[in-house]
Image (tube, rainbow, N blue to C red; front, top):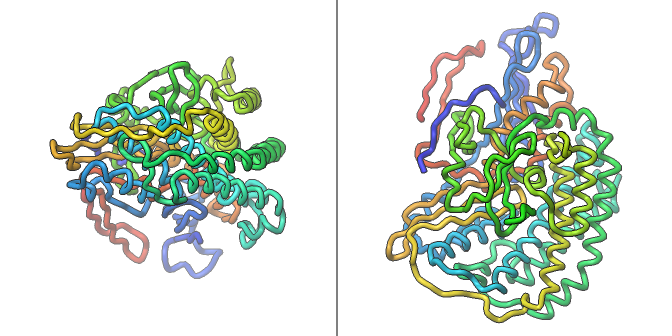
Amino acid sequence: MATKKIVPPAVGAATVEAPAGQASEATRPAMKKITIHHVSRIEGHARITIKLDGAGKVADTQFHVTQIRGFEKFTEGRPYYEMPSITSRICGICPISHELASSKACDAIMAVRIPDTAAKLRELVHMAQFVQSHALSFFHLSAPDLLLGFDFDPAKRNIAGLLEEHPDALRDGIALRKFGQTVIERLARERIHPSWAVPGGVNEPLDPQAREKTLAEWPTAMAIVKRTLELWKKTVDSYPNEIDSFSNFPTMYCGLVGPDGSLRLYDGNLRFVDSDGSMIADQVKPDDYAAYIGEATLSDSYLKAPYYKPVGFDGGIYRVGPLARLNVADRCGTPEADAELAEYRARFGTGAAHRIVQSGFHYHYARLIEATYAMERMHQLLDDPAILGAKVRAHAGVNNLEGVGIIEAPRGTLIHNYKVNDDGAMTWANLIVATGHNNLAMGRGIRQVAERFVDGNHIQEGALNRVSAIVRAYDPCLSCSTHALGTVPLVLELHGPDGALLDEIRTE
């Protein structure tokens, strides 16, 4: 797929820059630029630039993803059957998602239908990953803001502060993540970067003792999810300004659903809905994704910017991930998650059907509902006698020269698209990773939050923390997402002592 090169429209410890040579506060002109050098409590590296006008008001923002990794290129020439193990190394937080999406792409190259038990085991390990990843996001990365407050002392707005102020909640978070990782280890033999999911299925069946241990521990983990949901439902209304300004604008939404429109995390087809909940495209099969999703490169970031191709780049912004998945799906499909979804929509949904929850602040709420679903679905799978079946892998060679695997990672829709030669060697790969889909929405959300909270004449740490927190709401995995196609845009600028741009070199 060709990557479209676009210079984007204005979307969007800190330093403040002003013209040089000003000796005093009284004579210094308005500040020109604020740079948040490191967005904290995210996976990966990013920087935010806030540009100010002469009155100190926000004129523009930019979200810079400052790392790049080239998995698409350095996997060329490798045997396709190595791809699940290779791509699981992309990320230490969601290696299962990459391993499963890769395995599904390889299944398509082999043109096999994997055994029913293998499909159930893959989904089971995926549910465990959702539990551990959502626990990490809510408790470890965002809870310092959500439970302590965005304006809390920054020296204590962290895990240590949570331990002091909310010890029970923090212990719950640690225990819930441990449960998810333990289930992964029991199935895949390793918690991180396993090699258990393979083309055609999985490497080995589930040990009956592992099943019994997991079922015995499940009630305690489920109780944590319920407690956390109740805590958050009592807390969320404390943040009306954040609800109002954290990516609170209309976009399209994308996610996987089943034939009945229910939430699917392991297997399903793509659905796109509009900001009012109306259907744009439904049951888009994995092989057809490229007709609906285009990709742009931006001059100020290594993160690609996917967009809804039938509309075009300018109007094709859409979101993925927990918030989007709950907007896209008709229902979750498990009883407690469906009850929570109904309450969530009744409280925060818009339109006659209250289907669409628009504010990006509610990614946190949606994440907890998905954790409920993942726990319920895990129990359903463990209760199924077929989960202990011995037939777990189909064997075949190269029967197709291209394969696509799509799965819902905790952060959103994940696409692996491979091409191979007749010998099974990789000739081309394209990865569209969840955080990339949200790139344009995150940029616009940063601009919205900065305009609401940042005053260039009176900088407040809590305001800049909110600018970073809108990024954390999306729970980006930037190491996963920086997979540029073709030439990487590069901009070199030379500025004089007064801040004026003297020279510029661009490669596109």
